[in-house]
Amino acid sequence: MVDETRVHSARRYNYWLGGKDNFAVDRESGDQIAAVFPTIRVTARENRGFLRRAVTHLTAEAGIRQFLDIGTGLPTADNTHEVAQRLAGEARVVYVDNDPMVLAHARALLTSTPEGRTAYLEADLREPEKILADPAVRDVLDFDRPIALMLIAVLHFIDDTDEARRIVRTLLDALPAGSYLVLSHGTSDYADAETHARFAAMATRGAIDAWPRTRDEVRSLVDGLDLLEPGIAPVNEWRAEGEAGPRPTAAEVAVYGLVARKP
Ligand SMILES: C[S@@+](CC[C@H](N)C(=O)[O-])C[C@H]1O[C@@H](n2cnc3c(N)ncnc32)[C@H](O)[C@@H]1O
Image 1 (tube, protein in one colour):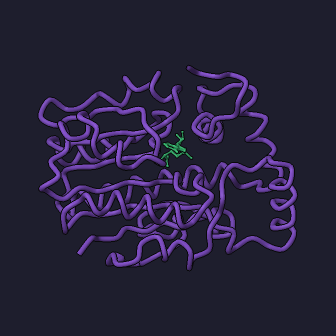
Image 2 (tube, protein in one colour):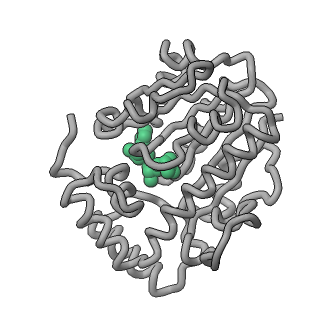
C-alpha cells in the first residue's frame, strides 16, 4: 500500500528530479537533505546521465541484451529499457523495486518494443535469492546468457557493508561469465568537515536513510570483477566527454559510478 505519511526514497528522488509523483513528507525530507547538501538535484540528474551512458555502452559496445534493474525508481525520462531498446529493439529488462508507488506507476516501465520484453517485480534487494527465483525474472531473462545487473543509487540504502557485499555476491553468482554490474553509490569522500558534521547530526536524529561509502568500501563490493575504464569514478566524470555545457564537480555530485565485468 502507498503510505503518504512515510518518506519513500523513490518519491523523494522523483521530487529532486522535478517529478510530480511525491507527497509533502517526501518533499520535506528532500528539502532537509538539500539544506545540508544543496546540489542534491544535480546529483540526481548526473546519476541518471550515468545510467544512460552505462546502458548505452553495454548495449552498443558490449552486446548486452538483458538487464536486471534493481531499485528502479519511479519511471522518468530514459528508463533502462528505453535506452537499451533504442539501440537494440530485442533487449529485455526486468525492473525490481520495493516501493508500492513504483508498482503503481509500473505501466510506464512496461512499454517494451514488440521484439523485446520488460517485466516489473515488487521485491526487496535484501532478499536477492527471492528475486533470482521469481518466475517473472526467470521467464524474461535467460541466465545462460550475459545479464547486466543494475544497482543504481540503491545499495547505499543497505547500511551494513558486509550485507551489501553479500547481496552483490549472491546476485552475481547467479549470472554467467561475461555478465556486468553497473553500480552507482553515494560517497562522502568529497565532503568538507562542515558537511560531514551536518550529516552526522542528521544521522543522530535518525533523519538519514542512506549510507555513503568510501572509494575503498565501494571497491570491496566489486571484488573479483574487472572494472571497465575509467574504474570507480564520480558519476559526472564516468565517460562524460560527450556531455554538453559546464560540468559539475565530483564534490557537488558525491556519487561514485562503475561498470564491471564478471570474468
Ligand atoms: C535513489 S532511487 C534510484 C532510482 C534509479 N535506480 C536511478 O538511479 O535513477 C532508489 C530506489 O531504490 C529503491 N529501493 C530502496 N531500497 C530498496 C530495497 N531494499 N529493495 C528494492 N528497492 C529499494 C527505492 O524505492 C527507489 O526507487
